[in-house]
Length: 445
Ligand SMILES: NC(=O)c1ccc[n+]([C@@H]2O[C@H](COP(=O)([O-])OP(=O)(O)OC[C@H]3O[C@@H](n4cnc5c(N)ncnc54)[C@H](O)[C@@H]3O)[C@@H](O)[C@H]2O)c1
Ligand SMILES: *[C@@H]1O[C@H](CO)[C@@H](O)[C@H](O)[C@H]1NC(C)=O
Image 1: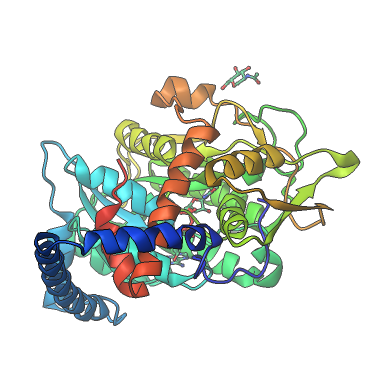
Image 2: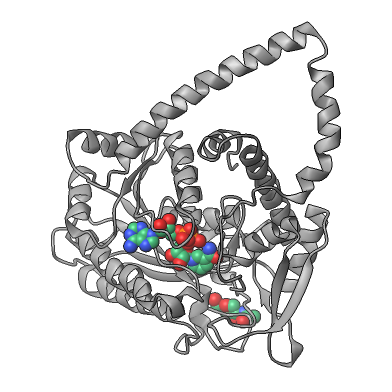
């Protein structure tokens, strides 16, 4: 994944774009206050704003109660049960790990909207700015989804959760993501993607009934492969990063639990997921911010001046693939401690129709942001990135009905719109409040 090292806060404090408009805004402002009736409307607006600020204060109080990492207690159990409540016939109750993350937040919302019961789990680590994770949490809270603050390595907490709720499914999206960071902090990958995965699978194995598990692997397992498109049956034994190696290990570990304990497993190899509420450590996100701030963007180029290309996949398409995986997952077969019959084991690519080069991606951003990028093109250092990814999605198409519909043009337009809303609210209001407000302004479809 091409991205910039040393990320700062994900929202620029004062982008040039808004400075340019300040003159006309000033004039409009005067026009607004010209008559007494609009004056009255503004007063009303302020009252509403104050009232919502007060409710925000109580929201902060209650969310800091959620976040006082101690789990357990009557109140906590009540919140878990209420959040897991199913609102449709034959609906699921799903434990979503990594629910405060990019993909986890979107999948949780989609499931909740159709009436499934959701309990989130996230450790809110600071791999990237946790303010963004808190903002996603407040978005989920406003849809009555409770996120337990805890680590997937906490075996007692998991046992308690399965004790309280008979989860039909586990959507496991918690992980240490990012390819480059593995060189800085290798143990965080072992902790979350290997140890954490085993702890979670142990809890699922012991649960009665056992849930069906859908989890996120990654396109990075294709590593140094040169044959494209990447098909699920291709070799995956030459990873180019520790991140990829832990995802590959995850595929083998889940296979063992499937084989011995009858857990139903679906592994999804995501290809460069992007969109609103996305991850600040990814290139499209940091590029957007840098272009707005007039800072240079570092575009990597492969050997022989070949451009890097990615099968960018829009978040709504990924969500559909995740939901279809849950819908088509067969039941686990080892409830009660004895495997009765072979359980389902599947792996799918979730990508897009065709890859786009990174310079083309920058071009699309320039168009949507109406601003030119200062590009600094450098030779790709050997840091775990692969030059090219392209998914063969024919399996996902036949088995899941997976059909990506959003191209990069359209998807980045939606991302930029979201980014604009962020900037607007951050520039006009205090940060915490603006993120809270944003969770109401912007609701993914
Ligand atoms: N976004 C992509 O392009 C992409 C591509 C391939 C694979 N994936 C995989 O998809 C999944 C979701 O990715 P994302 O982009 O939403 O990343 P994300 O970092 O936004 O979400 C992951 C969430 O998991 C949480 N988490 C990490 N370790 C944890 C632990 N030990 N216990 C509890 N919570 C923990 C983090 O706090 C974070 O909120 C990950 O497994 C990732 O590896 C993502
Ligand atoms: C895509 O994968 C399917 C099997 O899932 C395979 O039959 C087909 O040949 C692959 N297509 C290409 C172009 O590799």
